[in-house]
Image (cartoon, rainbow, N blue to C red; front, side, top):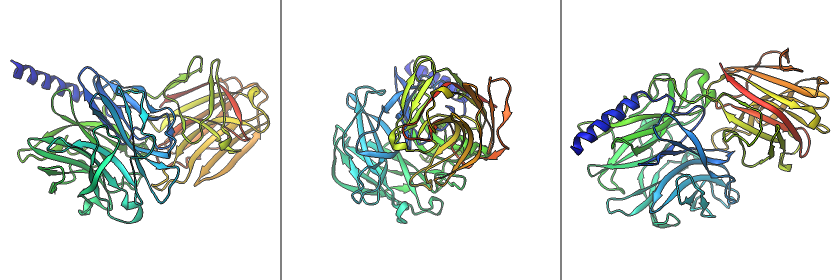
Length: 510
């Protein structure tokens, strides 16, 4: 009878899987780590880069409906500066742990370091170890905890050699049971040796089935429009190896309109099987929505090698929650809003949003930034600025915004925006760290100034209005400097410790 019930549950879950939205969640959620627990459902954490709260926590009971349930860090730990990458959530005894990588504030000859934080529940509150778990000259990223064939806990990670034009081995090292200390010496498992892998193997995720460890990994160029990312697998009867790579690699590659799937997190699911969670870009203008969260069932062939779905990302299916919104900032800050972890603004919500830039922002036009993810590169966003709250040269506005990767070719924040001050209304652009004012005209005399930004892929138009009904064009159509991963941003800047007030903001998807 138990076998029959399991079979029925498996068929029911398979039916649910066919109906899953693709992507699972709107907007960019890269480098996923997902665990399942009966009674708690699915918990996911993803890369934050330089955005805070750091490592947002997503929860779902059915893989269809997801909600933000918190963050690992409201503010990042003191030892870490930025680029919070590839968190990995796991259960250690009666506690949860999140392992992650970040750039340290004090380099001292080190590149990326590994950190760990623990909590009594999957949603926190998390307490960081307080110092890096591991730092090295060539960097350590993509941590993954796993037990070997004897039940001994190990931590896997990738040495970031590709940044230094070196090979990229994946190592394993024994880990204390509380996750707070690495023991012994690291042992190399695999490195980039195959043509399809290019200069990179990374993002290990290990399961054990029928006495064999299966090591899923990603390879080649992860990010940007020239990306070549894909997923491969190797197997071994013991964790330390020797590992044999699948002759049919990669087992997950671009297709069905998706580009560069990777960083697969493979985890037991509610049906008793395995499921892979990974990110991918949508082709064309879809790059501007960033790396989106997808999922496929993991199967196994007669030869024991695993398969991820059909070997291609799933065909898009409607159903992911919209990123459209309308916010009057009446009670509390919606959890969808995020800010730069190295320039934390002071925020006050109630009868509008008042945002004051940290002194670290200086006089830049985006000294303070508050952003939201967007699901589509085609949308219309609006913001209503209360000019009476502006002082001196302060400006407040909205922008399409991308904070670049420090180590993957970005250089500061690329942005295109419009902002209004006491006496001026401007359009500005930042490319490769350089800001240029494209248009500077006299501001309307009304207390409230409504700004509108219409994004159609890489083309952007700005408009303004005194009353929110009658709109005037603000310059000509412009080409966005962003080539991927745009966000909607509210900005305040123009003077030291600039402050601005927004009566409302919103976004409609097109």
